[in-house]
Structure formats: structure tokens, C-alpha cells
Amino acid sequence: MYRRGIVTQRQPRGPQFPRLNLGAAARLAAAVVAGSIIAGILSAHWLLLSPGAVLHGALWQPLTYAFIITGSIELLFDAIILVTIGGELERWWGPQRLTRFLVGVPVVAALATCLLALAFPVLRDLYFAGGTAMATAAWCAYGWSLGTRYTNFWGITVTGDQLALIGIGMVVMRAAFASMLFVLPDLITVALTYAFVRGRR
Image (tube, one colour):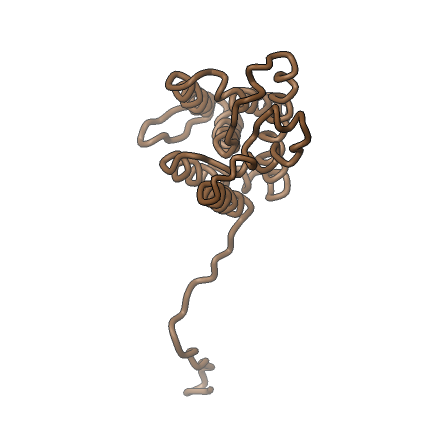
């Protein structure tokens, strides 16, 4: 309508909500949360990575395990990492490259774990959840992409390389409370991430 020469629009009735525009990083985080909840409710161990099962034909596991985290606190923390740090990587790389990286690296790490299981049979009966590997890839990639530039870690100024070391340290801490074998895909993920980021420089 017109009011003294100014064009105005009628306000729509009812409550108004902001539009939610989810980027690739946020969608991956949502997929990890959904996959973890579904796997927990259904006790779907067949969605986790078991190298022995993969060697016997469970070829979906290297992909599905990447969207599962088995601990509630870990799930919350890693989802935040994917949304925040992953979102920053998405701004630098674009959504397609980010998605290929964050999904592809855990999948390749799973396949490498299965190949190692051929030589080390002890790995065949273990189960791995790979959502932590996805978050670790995002964390370390962000740090190594920054390199010697500075960033903020909970109020502490650190370089990007130091931030990546903190991410590696969290993987080592998980190993200290369990076994190095249980974080093998995460360790392979760190090595793949380093090679990927350094290769882009």
C-alpha cells in the first residue's frame, strides 16, 4: 500500500522464523548426529567399521562408520567442531571440496585399516566409530592450513601448527585410556590430512 509516497508492505500474520541456510559443514555435522543416534537406538554395530566384517563383504562400513560417534560428550564436541571449524574450511575451500575431504579421508583411513588387518589379525574383531576421525580431519586441516599464523584456542593464542598438535594430542589421549589400536583410523586420518594440506601449499 502507499502511505504519503512511501511504499509499505503488509506484515504477514503469525510468528516469523529466520530461514536456516545450512552449509555443507553443518549438514555433515547433522548427519553425524543423526547417524550416531540411530546407531545407538538400534544398537547397529553393523554400521561401525569392523575390518573382519569388511573383508567378508560388509563393504558399506567404511562409509557408514564415518557418521557414527559412540559417546554423547564426544558427539556434542565433535559436532561443534564440524560446524565451526568445518564451516571456516568450507569458506576457504568451498562446499564440494570440503565434503569430499571430510568424507573421503575417514573412508580412505578405514580402507587402510582393513588392509592392515590382513597383516595384523588382531584388528579384524575390533569395531571403530569414524565420526571422531571426521572431526579430527577438520581440526588438523584448519590448523595446518593456518600454519604459522595465529588463532585463538579457548582464549589462548596459538599458531595453526600448534592447534593441529592439540588435535593430535586429543587422539593420543583417547589412546591412553584405551589402546592405540582403537584410534588407528584416527591416526591414519591425521597422516592423510597432513599430506592433503601440505600438498595444497
